[in-house]
Image 1 (cartoon, rainbow, N blue to C red):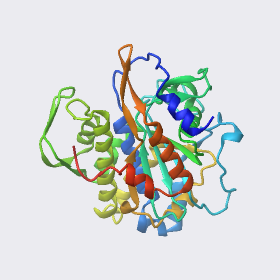
Image 2: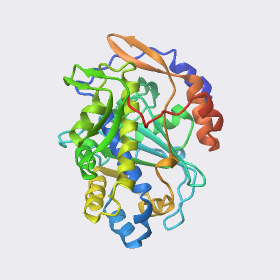
Image 3: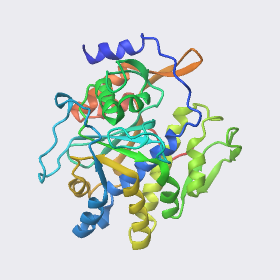
Image 4: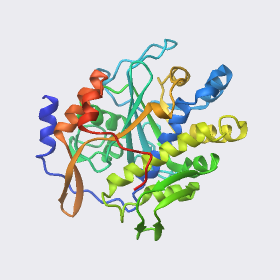
Length: 359
């Protein structure tokens, strides 16, 4: 079946009724992705080979993609070979902070509410980061406890672990993903506090009736706890979850900017605290060449990252549950841009988010 056919079917099938999350956490999970960007785009500190070795060796590895059939896997360079682009990296947020849920494929917490796809171009000079709405109504292939069918994309991790989520994203976009990582949200507060907090610009005063907080128009200095509340707000935002995704991207940009320009890189204590926080929150696939990825990404900086969201086409409601409808034309265009490693036409039609401003 063609990508266009698969995408068009997504707009026709009726959704299954699912239980609504009592405590949506996907936005704060995504912030840890920004810290990972710091690791990949560290700039000056990566020049020291011993530093690379030290932190790369501490990153936890697990066979998180063991459920992906060989014929569905992207090719990866053999051990010791240089890492070259283009590369697709999928990062998933896990909300099992206390470890109370059972492990699947070696990873705690199989309730992912955060999905970001990173595309690093062939020259390793630019990174495209695409947030995927957690309630996107998509076809999930059979795997784990799931027999195959349509549901919210964030259900894939619960049904079949990271491998089923990766297969779902690959099938949706018609692409192959080289590496994947699962990230815990528990490091958010420590990460933001490790850099001394971050500044964000709120464009319009909003009131969050869920957490009883008012965000006045203007510049706000956020502690780790403040950042958590800021990115969790949905009520009171004009575009709901879409605006919340933009907020997470805004804080990602502020966090990376603070880490690379705010004296963190030159302060061994702050840098170590930040990197230890990152490392403690990330699990990568066993075959991921962490050291080689860091070295290949040494020239990347904040300006090299373009933030965007996967194109959507409105909301549908069935059985009292809201689902986000995927744009079939937008998904097809995004898949083509990724496979061709050329986003010129795509970004003209689907402009990137301005992650430097608030909402």
